[in-house]
Image 1 (cartoon, one colour):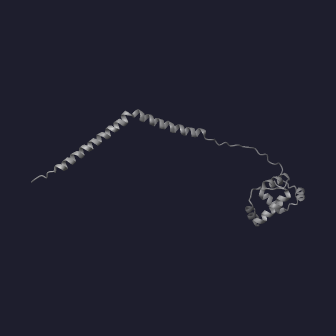
Image 2 (image 1 turned 180 degrees about the vertical axis):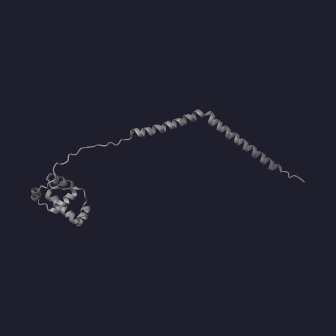
Image 3 (image 1 turned 135 degrees about the horizontal axis):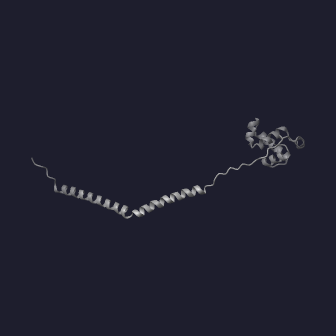
Length: 155
């Protein structure tokens, strides 16, 4: 029996591939050696610098973050319940519906919310508001509420 003989070209290609692979492995190993062993101090220094920079940024954010403060303020409670200033109400000519709408405005409701609560249209609420504002001499809702409280019409 005859043994098959490799062609000389194929043998050279295999030999060159094997030598090339070994050379690449040696170059990779020497690159690793150069990087890790020769520059180990620089690598460790960079890692420590990154660690301290990260810690410093975190600590700076924690220390400069505004803290929540809770302020307790004692509000004096009225000793007596609210009593409507009926003579002032009669002098101004404010109707009970207008007073009711002023009270709801003082609670912070919008015209649409007042209309929904009283089962009237929004235009009706606007009409009552403008008449009450005219009688109080107010231009805005906040001014009407302030005047109503000063005159004893609103709690």
